[in-house]
Length: 201
Image 1 (cartoon, rainbow, N blue to C red):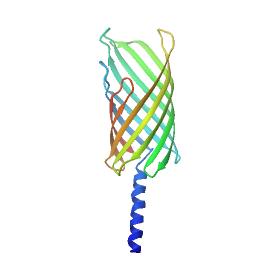
Image 2: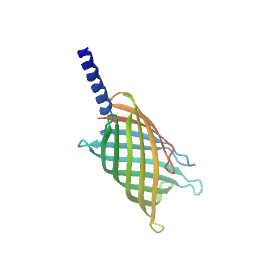
Image 3: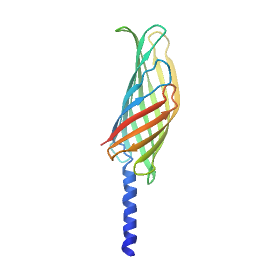
Image 4: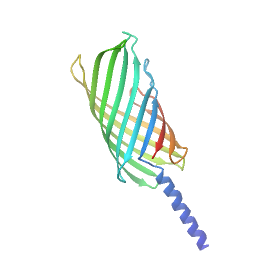
């Protein structure tokens, strides 16, 4: 009976440690986003995180998409680049809270044929905060709130300030400890659904 009780405790400890270990902050992720606005192509992007202390990680992302303009037949290339620092800490055996601050750059190019007509760059900062939870050894849920504040340097008009707050939810399935796939939803103005494939390292 004594050995059985010890084995039960040991199994529980190993099981909870396996859960906690699955919340990784060292990964690279490929992502596709769909958009609910006419003329917007799907966006393709890369996200990454590297934890260099138990609680601090570097974060970065890049995404690019095309936009078809039916009014003047111009095509647009739109890309977003971010880089920053994040902090994360467990609040339960299978739950982490996290946050990060980022430099954000939006690059918007309008073209007619092969010649670019304008090149607008907006930059500023972003703040993100959220929670990650392992429901079991395979399924993870994530919810976050994201704030972006940028200023557009427009070649044809005065500078324009812009801010946005959006919410996102992600369900992630871990095929192995190294690979996982996800499906997410965002309330951002031009984003609807996202799918991704992540590799932990």
